[in-house]
Length: 219
Image 1: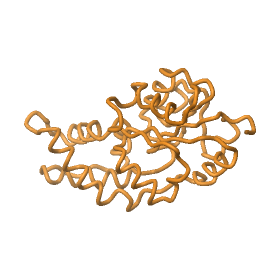
Image 2 (image 1 turned 90 degrees about the vertical axis):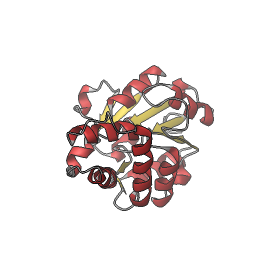
Image 3 (image 1 turned 180 degrees about the horizontal axis):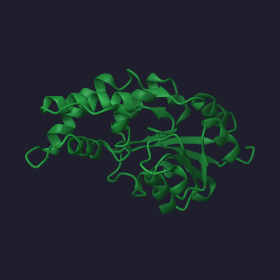
């Protein structure tokens, strides 16, 4: 096992994949349907990470639109319809992602995904990028009754992998990931290149990595 944890739980957006362009395209399509101007991709990038509804709320707020008369259920359903059609257009793996997943797999490490992105679209993206086979479990934002930073999704991942917290590690890119890991008392590393709205080194993770291959040395 080369000293690696028995199980590694990965966040997705901003950690293994750069999905900002496709999320921005879907959000901007939704905003334009409500008479709003489009937002820049870099602006949308800072809104990612807490699930679809938070992304929509932040998008409408940034566009100067009050959501008082808009039903979240309706705009969420519309966003998912739009996003499902473009979710794999520009989304890409970060450099080194495939080789790192393969290296952990070769070492016998069990791997899972714990994301606030809905499970169905997550699996579609993993399949499109040809990395689905690396993960024994995928827990999305709608898989359990709560989203990160609630510990329930991470606990579900660990249970599916039959992995104890003390033998596991979480890898993410945000304060949400750090809080989730801390709630389960497992080590956590965060990417410096991700979607966090504050500098990675201020998030209180056990380690920060600048490239995915460096995780192999820090895990």
